[in-house]
Image (cartoon, rainbow, N blue to C red; front, top):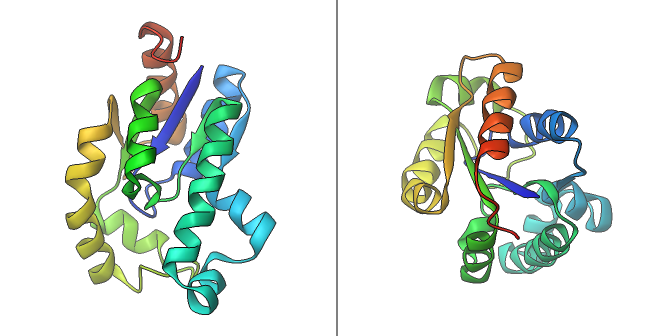
Length: 166
């Protein structure tokens, strides 16, 4: 089974993904973590090599993660690549959303090169949300509910849905 978590920055894809993988007894891959592990901090890649280079590295990480299977957390912009959008047709896709108020408390970490405060976050989410929505098979809001509840809902949905990746 492959389950991909998509959504805006600060939606909790990594946190939910780790717990969901444990719950489903699947491996967990975070594409942003893989990029950082292999190439250094994302903010530095953006600053020194540019977004185009980062997106190429991200695409490589996505391809490797999807070929491995399990629970995969994508970086917020990974879905911008049309090839990745096509890849998602074959797997379960969960959209994690978050309110601006909850996101504001989560984005003050300096690790998100395209998000410099809540107003840039809002603009980015407004632009990307139609794409996120079009790719999603299941949606969960992470703003206020316990992660354990969210994970259980996603796990139950995964267990009840027909396999897309058969």
